[in-house]
Image (tube, rainbow, N blue to C red; front, side, top):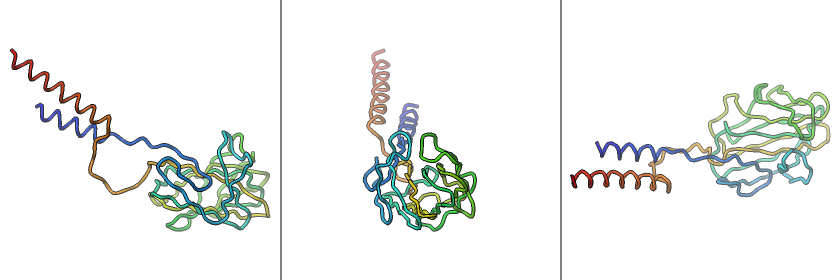
Length: 207
Protein backbone atom coordinates (compact mmCIF):
# COMPACT_ATOMS: atom_id res chain seq x y z
CA UNK A 1 0.00 0.00 0.00
CA UNK A 2 2.81 2.38 0.94
CA UNK A 3 4.61 1.66 -2.35
CA UNK A 4 1.43 2.47 -4.26
CA UNK A 5 1.10 5.78 -2.44
CA UNK A 6 4.72 6.68 -3.16
CA UNK A 7 4.34 5.76 -6.84
CA UNK A 8 1.16 7.84 -7.05
CA UNK A 9 2.91 10.80 -5.44
CA UNK A 10 5.85 10.57 -7.85
CA UNK A 11 3.54 10.39 -10.86
CA UNK A 12 1.42 13.32 -9.68
CA UNK A 13 4.35 15.54 -8.81
CA UNK A 14 6.26 14.76 -11.99
CA UNK A 15 3.19 15.58 -14.05
CA UNK A 16 2.89 19.10 -12.65
CA UNK A 17 2.66 21.45 -15.64
CA UNK A 18 5.27 24.11 -16.30
CA UNK A 19 3.64 27.52 -16.14
CA UNK A 20 3.97 29.35 -19.44
CA UNK A 21 4.47 33.09 -19.47
CA UNK A 22 3.12 35.31 -22.21
CA UNK A 23 5.91 37.30 -23.84
CA UNK A 24 5.41 40.20 -26.23
CA UNK A 25 8.26 41.02 -28.56
CA UNK A 26 9.01 43.57 -31.22
CA UNK A 27 12.73 43.52 -31.92
CA UNK A 28 15.33 40.81 -31.43
CA UNK A 29 16.26 39.61 -27.95
CA UNK A 30 15.56 37.02 -25.29
CA UNK A 31 12.04 37.04 -23.91
CA UNK A 32 11.53 34.60 -21.05
CA UNK A 33 12.44 31.16 -22.36
CA UNK A 34 12.58 32.05 -26.05
CA UNK A 35 15.14 33.99 -28.08
CA UNK A 36 13.86 35.99 -31.05
CA UNK A 37 15.78 37.18 -34.10
CA UNK A 38 14.37 39.38 -36.85
CA UNK A 39 15.13 40.03 -40.50
CA UNK A 40 13.73 42.31 -43.15
CA UNK A 41 11.85 45.55 -42.46
CA UNK A 42 11.66 45.31 -38.66
CA UNK A 43 12.37 48.81 -37.36
CA UNK A 44 11.66 49.34 -33.66
CA UNK A 45 9.62 52.51 -33.25
CA UNK A 46 9.39 55.00 -30.42
CA UNK A 47 5.75 55.66 -31.28
CA UNK A 48 3.20 54.65 -28.66
CA UNK A 49 1.20 52.42 -30.94
CA UNK A 50 -0.26 50.11 -28.30
CA UNK A 51 -1.50 50.64 -24.72
CA UNK A 52 0.53 49.63 -21.70
CA UNK A 53 3.88 50.56 -23.21
CA UNK A 54 4.00 47.53 -25.49
CA UNK A 55 6.95 47.96 -27.85
CA UNK A 56 6.22 47.88 -31.55
CA UNK A 57 7.96 47.67 -34.89
CA UNK A 58 7.01 49.62 -37.97
CA UNK A 59 6.71 48.01 -41.39
CA UNK A 60 6.44 50.20 -44.46
CA UNK A 61 4.29 49.37 -47.46
CA UNK A 62 5.28 46.39 -49.57
CA UNK A 63 7.85 45.32 -46.98
CA UNK A 64 8.01 42.34 -44.64
CA UNK A 65 9.40 41.48 -41.22
CA UNK A 66 10.30 37.92 -40.22
CA UNK A 67 10.52 36.74 -36.61
CA UNK A 68 12.54 33.57 -36.00
CA UNK A 69 12.17 31.72 -32.69
CA UNK A 70 14.79 29.63 -30.92
CA UNK A 71 12.15 27.05 -30.01
CA UNK A 72 8.95 25.89 -31.72
CA UNK A 73 6.07 27.92 -30.25
CA UNK A 74 2.50 26.68 -30.12
CA UNK A 75 0.56 28.53 -32.78
CA UNK A 76 -2.53 28.54 -30.56
CA UNK A 77 -0.73 30.94 -28.19
CA UNK A 78 0.27 33.40 -30.93
CA UNK A 79 -1.35 36.87 -30.97
CA UNK A 80 -0.40 39.45 -33.61
CA UNK A 81 -1.12 43.06 -32.63
CA UNK A 82 -1.65 45.57 -35.46
CA UNK A 83 -2.18 49.33 -35.26
CA UNK A 84 -2.37 52.39 -37.52
CA UNK A 85 -3.48 50.30 -40.48
CA UNK A 86 -4.92 52.83 -42.93
CA UNK A 87 -7.78 52.42 -45.36
CA UNK A 88 -6.66 50.44 -48.39
CA UNK A 89 -3.83 48.70 -46.51
CA UNK A 90 -3.58 44.98 -45.78
CA UNK A 91 -1.37 42.52 -43.92
CA UNK A 92 -0.52 38.98 -44.98
CA UNK A 93 0.83 36.33 -42.62
CA UNK A 94 3.10 33.38 -43.32
CA UNK A 95 5.06 30.93 -41.21
CA UNK A 96 7.92 28.51 -41.79
CA UNK A 97 5.29 26.08 -43.13
CA UNK A 98 3.89 28.49 -45.73
CA UNK A 99 1.20 31.15 -46.17
CA UNK A 100 -1.54 31.40 -43.54
CA UNK A 101 -5.08 32.28 -44.65
CA UNK A 102 -6.71 34.67 -42.18
CA UNK A 103 -10.43 34.19 -41.51
CA UNK A 104 -12.99 36.46 -39.83
CA UNK A 105 -12.82 34.54 -36.55
CA UNK A 106 -9.10 35.36 -36.26
CA UNK A 107 -9.58 39.14 -36.13
CA UNK A 108 -10.73 40.98 -33.01
CA UNK A 109 -10.66 44.69 -32.38
CA UNK A 110 -10.18 47.53 -32.49
CA UNK A 111 -7.67 47.57 -29.62
CA UNK A 112 -8.66 50.09 -26.94
CA UNK A 113 -5.94 52.72 -26.57
CA UNK A 114 -4.08 51.73 -29.75
CA UNK A 115 -3.56 53.94 -32.80
CA UNK A 116 -6.56 53.26 -35.00
CA UNK A 117 -10.15 53.00 -33.86
CA UNK A 118 -11.56 51.44 -37.02
CA UNK A 119 -12.37 47.74 -37.27
CA UNK A 120 -10.13 45.53 -39.39
CA UNK A 121 -11.49 42.49 -41.20
CA UNK A 122 -10.41 39.40 -43.09
CA UNK A 123 -10.60 39.24 -46.86
CA UNK A 124 -8.80 37.05 -49.36
CA UNK A 125 -6.77 35.41 -46.58
CA UNK A 126 -5.39 38.77 -45.41
CA UNK A 127 -6.18 41.35 -42.74
CA UNK A 128 -7.62 44.42 -44.48
CA UNK A 129 -8.91 47.87 -43.62
CA UNK A 130 -11.67 49.47 -45.65
CA UNK A 131 -11.92 52.87 -43.95
CA UNK A 132 -10.14 55.10 -41.43
CA UNK A 133 -7.23 53.98 -39.24
CA UNK A 134 -7.69 50.52 -37.76
CA UNK A 135 -6.20 48.18 -35.16
CA UNK A 136 -6.73 44.55 -34.23
CA UNK A 137 -5.38 41.47 -32.49
CA UNK A 138 -5.09 38.53 -34.85
CA UNK A 139 -4.96 34.90 -33.72
CA UNK A 140 -4.43 31.85 -35.92
CA UNK A 141 -7.35 29.40 -35.78
CA UNK A 142 -7.79 28.40 -39.43
CA UNK A 143 -6.16 24.94 -39.32
CA UNK A 144 -2.68 26.30 -38.59
CA UNK A 145 0.36 24.12 -37.93
CA UNK A 146 0.62 23.02 -34.30
CA UNK A 147 3.87 24.92 -33.85
CA UNK A 148 5.98 27.40 -35.77
CA UNK A 149 9.61 28.48 -35.71
CA UNK A 150 9.18 31.65 -37.78
CA UNK A 151 6.49 34.21 -38.53
CA UNK A 152 6.50 36.73 -41.41
CA UNK A 153 4.27 39.81 -41.58
CA UNK A 154 3.96 41.64 -44.91
CA UNK A 155 2.44 45.15 -44.93
CA UNK A 156 0.87 46.27 -48.21
CA UNK A 157 -0.87 49.54 -48.91
CA UNK A 158 -0.75 53.15 -49.93
CA UNK A 159 2.61 54.42 -48.74
CA UNK A 160 2.14 54.58 -44.98
CA UNK A 161 3.62 52.63 -42.10
CA UNK A 162 1.87 49.99 -39.97
CA UNK A 163 2.76 49.10 -36.36
CA UNK A 164 3.07 45.49 -35.18
CA UNK A 165 3.92 43.42 -32.12
CA UNK A 166 3.70 39.66 -31.52
CA UNK A 167 2.84 37.89 -28.25
CA UNK A 168 3.16 34.17 -27.48
CA UNK A 169 3.68 31.80 -24.56
CA UNK A 170 7.40 31.18 -24.11
CA UNK A 171 6.80 27.69 -22.69
CA UNK A 172 4.01 26.75 -25.08
CA UNK A 173 6.40 24.55 -26.98
CA UNK A 174 5.45 21.47 -28.95
CA UNK A 175 8.27 18.99 -28.37
CA UNK A 176 8.74 15.21 -28.18
CA UNK A 177 7.71 13.66 -24.87
CA UNK A 178 10.54 13.65 -22.38
CA UNK A 179 11.23 11.44 -19.39
CA UNK A 180 9.45 13.07 -16.42
CA UNK A 181 11.73 14.71 -13.88
CA UNK A 182 10.96 16.17 -10.50
CA UNK A 183 11.14 19.89 -9.90
CA UNK A 184 12.47 21.37 -6.66
CA UNK A 185 8.96 21.65 -5.20
CA UNK A 186 8.14 18.10 -6.32
CA UNK A 187 11.25 16.80 -4.51
CA UNK A 188 10.22 18.67 -1.37
CA UNK A 189 6.73 17.18 -1.60
CA UNK A 190 8.06 13.67 -2.15
CA UNK A 191 10.48 14.01 0.79
CA UNK A 192 7.58 15.08 3.01
CA UNK A 193 5.50 12.06 1.98
CA UNK A 194 8.38 9.65 2.59
CA UNK A 195 9.04 11.25 5.99
CA UNK A 196 5.40 10.81 7.01
CA UNK A 197 5.42 7.17 5.90
CA UNK A 198 8.63 6.55 7.86
CA UNK A 199 7.24 8.19 10.98
CA UNK A 200 4.05 6.12 10.71
CA UNK A 201 6.08 2.90 10.45
CA UNK A 202 8.21 3.81 13.49
CA UNK A 203 5.10 4.41 15.61
CA UNK A 204 3.68 1.02 14.62
CA UNK A 205 6.93 -0.70 15.65
CA UNK A 206 6.90 1.05 19.05
CA UNK A 207 3.44 -0.34 19.73
